[in-house]
Image 1 (cartoon, rainbow over the protein chains, first blue to last red):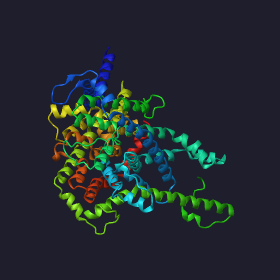
Image 2: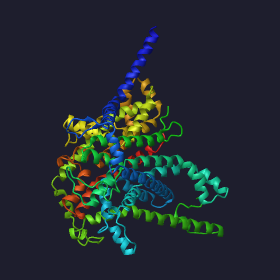
Image 3: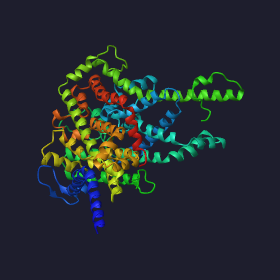
Image 4: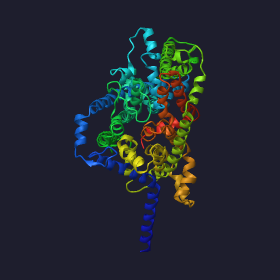
Length: 314
Length: 297
């Protein structure tokens, strides 16, 4: 009798202990996610401009966003463009730089530092820098290109070149992937390479049948986290568009979303445009929910119980 | 791969013909790899170099196509410092990043510790929720959050809506710390328990000293997340220039000084410089943090 009592008391104490340690995050989760998430769903069915009290509007916001709001589909297309093309190039380039750094034998530390530094550049600063570097009129990149006789593109001022310009900037900041790939490549067992060599495998075959299978979980990790990052891409395209269009910073400044011709508009920017420029909080919440559904789908891919890339473990 | 010789010094004295071809191949490979390395290094460094050079040009030269300044205008940096508001933005950034980092670390440690070392029902679920929050774009909940901070608490135009939430644990920091705490063997915790330490004492006296590198990584990442944040200040501080942070205010240089690329680039250098400087003092913590996120838990 007494034994079960103490056991139960012990259980209760350990549950309280766990709760106490988790409490900062549990409170944060409730206040800064659960409550606003429910509100987002609620507002997506309301007409609300922030001044007059919200009124029920049924599915009007939803049909507005999907059928009449001119920017939704372009933004979704741009986001998909970034997800497919930018992520692919970033993973390939990151892997390439990761392999290069494992082969460099002289001055490895210097090279690694130089390759890694751009990853640390603050996004706004990096975007300002690239808006200047790729400026069609006075930018050094176009000066050099024209001196070599290559026709220089309009970069952030040309709707066909603005996303490649963004991609170029993201390739510049590939240092995080380099570090992850470098760690994975150094972990591949040396014996497997030696065995492959004895069997007469060519360099390509060694890469294809030894390196690739060994690092494929890391490649998947890079792809999925890259996709999530691409979906959230906000600051860089926004700042690039604003700087290229010559808009002036300040409170309540209106700017053409996604300059030029909404080519740099991404989904997260729509929430800002709808909510804080058009004061249509209801429609902004619809876009927020679309964004939520997409990012959770990719996160689920990252955490599938078996074969997931981040495992909870036991 | 096995032919690669580690040092070019070893390439000097060829003996047998077979060895000679092997060495020649190694030399060629060494040259190929290092030329590629230099090409890559140029790609990664030239943007910094051009930004730095432009920041030292005169107004008119910055608008020309010259790559190197004729006269070195160090006064550009003084002009940036003299811009009204610049020191206030600097101070705001330090408050947001500094206070935010302390709050994040203090509130995330116990959560990460429980997720790494306690066994309880719903642990996997909690961890999965933490990871989901890590992946959540801030725009998803920004409308109700803005209404909450601005309309209910009347705190828009201040840094508080960005700082206060950090006192309630940050998902990325919790995840990173948990990954790190997993690497601390349980034997240390058991030993502390045998010695009569409670949970809190074990955490403070045994785990924290061992977790210093992990905490350093989290602190750095959080500091720079705040330093780099553009969305938070845009939503909560845009109406009040006295509450702007450097990252948010940076664009205004382009506006305030029209197309003075030289001053804009000088300001850009000043926003980048602290990050780069800190990196040189804390390289290990950065790289450790990046690797931990890519490792299975």
